[in-house]
Amino acid sequence: MLHIDIISVVPALLESPFSHSIMKRARDRGLLEVDVIDLREYGINKHAQVDDYQFGGGAGMVMMIEPVDRCLADLKAKRTYDEIIYLSPDGELLQQSVANQLSLCGNLVLICGHYKGIDERIRQHLVTREISIGDYVLSGGELAAAVLVDAVGRLIPGVLNDETSALSDSFQDDLLAPPVYTRPADYKGWKVPEVLLSGHDAKIAAWRQEESLKRTKERRPGLLKNFENQEGK
Image (cartoon, rainbow, N blue to C red):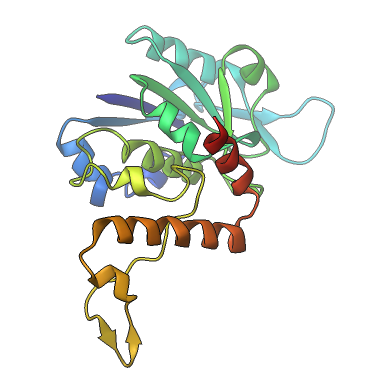
């Protein structure tokens, strides 16, 4: 089982993503456990403060180190974590290989930034890894955390009904997935490729590989370098 703790100042944002579809199935089956921790429970003073003005001036508030440190200390007293991850625009890009790696972990902590960001000392002394879901800025790390949990959680054995499904996803072999079709085979004259109706497994596999290469070359040619490197090993 994979256990993930998510530290957030707005935990309500994460109520829905893990309560439906595949993530709900993973939790119901006891394969994935997600706990969202309200950072304000560790806030300072009577106002449960978690942010303050930044030293040196400038617009925007900054998440304070003390509440985060107190929260992490409480969590670490209960279990040992493989990674303490900060969702950040300048972290390493979330790719399938990263999701594959994290799916093998036992316990993870995700820290959702907010406001202008977090005190740099959190990143220097408490965080073990920083991950970005893309080159853009969100209002907070909660949506990024949901994306990460979904990408990782679906890879846990037993979560997907068809065990081969995750292995054939886009990016698993550094190629985009091939086109897929379902019934009817002919709709308004728009026909499914004959090879997919042939029942010939080898020909279908070859067609899919060819289409994956073609689609990757057209849409994401940068991925082909990784694919060619893998092929050359």
